[in-house]
Image (cartoon, rainbow, N blue to C red; front, side):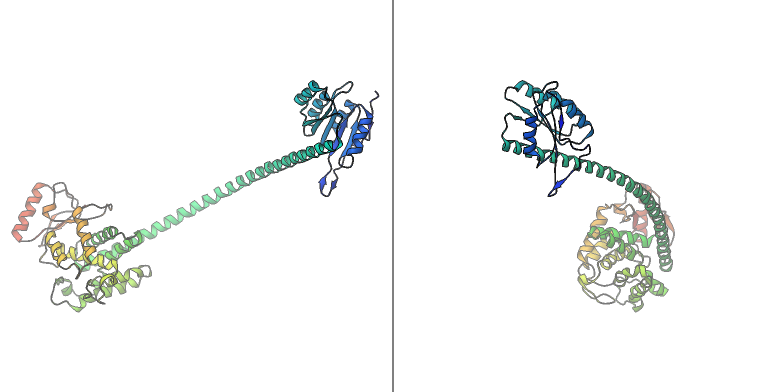
Length: 445
């Protein structure tokens, strides 16, 4: 039979749309022209149909034109459908391939399925409705694959653009991070300078207080550290613990306004308390309040001499109306006065000081604050490596290291800070207590 190509469209087949649905190009191959004509009449309204009676011509067309669906007869001279579909797959792998075959072509059909990658086969003679339904399903499948491919390509493109964007952003972030790190370092350095300056100012103020009152170096800091550790034991948060520390460090700053006579007076338990001594917390609060950063410290300094039963000064506050920091400072500073106060010529042993203060628990002192303080000193356990524990000779052990000088009642230094205590020192300290009928208090870690 003579090979011929019929109804071949131009080499560039434009994609048309009907109600926005794409019209697919269908390539038909059959060596019988009548069959091609029948198929064209049936399918031309739904597809762009190109038909060939010769397989080689059909392959040549495929090499230069876009085709969506390929449908080939099985039995043809020169080149059967299986061979044609196999070669068409190499040229245009994206097209959907269908096979027209008779029921006697089972072996050839299997070969076409295996080698030609066909989607399905249609038996001869065909039913028009079944053929149109099959092609409709094939079209849907093809369009779905095409859309999936398009979306995958978009995803790949988007991922590539995203990767490039991420790389660009990462570079910008790295540059910005380096700039922020440099700024952070500068800020950190500036804050450290300010912190060091603040510490220097506080140390200067503590030294001024100690110089004015005659207390030993480190007196104010010892009380401040004990107050901070006590605040932690009472479950105050870090901010309030630090605030209590600063208040305790400066709680005696108002003494700069007192006379020497008042400073030398024994105040705890005295029958007559000088009005000027009562006012030193008021003076201190006014001094501290002039520094804006320290404004929050004023109430604890102002109310440090309030009694828990409301009989204290200056405002006769009672119970929890007294700021917790003031209640803590009251307990710690009074205990320190009883066992080591410079103006106290009747210093007590630590045990006697505990007893004296317990008698006033609920009257002068907050019960819980006092008990926590006694437990804290008794256990001698703290996570603050600066904590100083007040102990008497009964608790002193060889190997203990002194944190402060031990100054005798005549002003002489008996032991210096940093010394490790031995048995000989302990024996001499006991003799000193017996000779002068006094009690020695030492400060150790």
